[in-house]
Length: 308
Ligand code: C5P
Image (tube, rainbow, N blue to C red):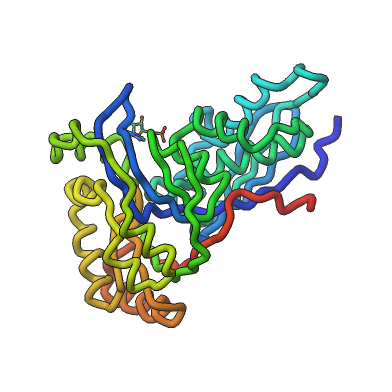
């Protein structure tokens, strides 16, 4: 057996433009959420090997676990357990390399994106030939945000966030993200939400129609007032310095400032590319984050880039 060149998949990060939280069912909160992909991208390369392993490069590499808790590794092993030896398919352990640009534990689904990319890469590498609908089912077993990373673009998520419907929009927005060195754990933020909003236990979250209409119009000024995140308040309660980051962005001219998913990354919507550059300069000068990056909306999801 030779190691071979492997398969490389590029996968974007996400923000939630709406995140409405309701009752808890079997340990998971019912959600209505609008996922939106942005072009902060991880690149995942999967090669067949004699043993399982994962290596990570890039600015956030030291924060990513490389043991059996790594979600990309779990994705590869799940594919192996399910398909090796079935229907004439022969699979091998794999070595996974993740070139990481998506912040870690930042509310941008970086770990989920790597898992989705790995599912797609393994499918290609061993010619497993599973269709997207089956990949989406496996993705949902790995985590609530993994299915969206496969499809990307803009999608309405329900149930745990894993049941997706496409949202019709061709709009492309410009974004700035303020990154914090501290991570926030998703279960901790949901637990804080339960403490702060006990009334949500009786709520069934519904799609944010105002936001969906704004996405159809495509104007950033329409989108800004419709953005909403129920997890923002608990994220701030756990990490009060986020308040300063949010206020710093609005003071510097952002159209909207909000916590991304369960945080602590703060997302800013801006008018255009020029607005993004101006905001980055202002946020850096105000020192309200540990790092600042810009991105644009991304039309797709995980995609094989090599071999083409
Ligand atoms: O699905 P995932 O493994 O990413 O979820 C991590 C944790 O986040 C869950 O164990 C749960 O505590 C919380 N969660 C939730 N409701 C959701 C999604 C996640 O409470 N819809």
